[in-house]
Length: 155
Image (cartoon, rainbow, N blue to C red):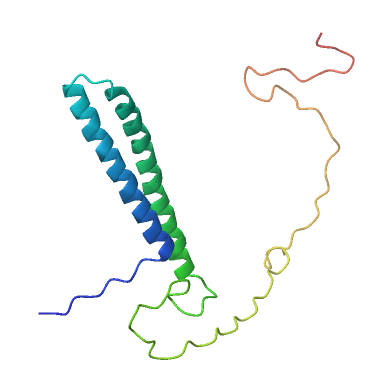
């Protein structure tokens, strides 16, 4: 039987977000039970329980969104280009000493700036003589306005 892969420990901020989501979900479920039982008993507690349940649903969705965001942030931190190790930003597992000391980060080679824009080497661009400005002979498109004539106004 192959040995199972050990799952990595979640970063602290993700674990805190998960705990908040579980607490918010549990309070929402308590609100659902209270609202259900008070509706069977025709009690006045049904209105506050329904309001608490609505706030709890909103809070639970907020916490789930917070989990997604904190997981993405933790994943980006572990993939950071200048991090010293792939687990940068998280603590080492308890009871497992590191096998080798962390290596210092290697200096990145300097990137050359982009060269200035140049014309295509096979076809250098030649300045063209521009003809004197002349108004178009006809309308720019069929059914369009006619060209303006000197001295006429449109109003």
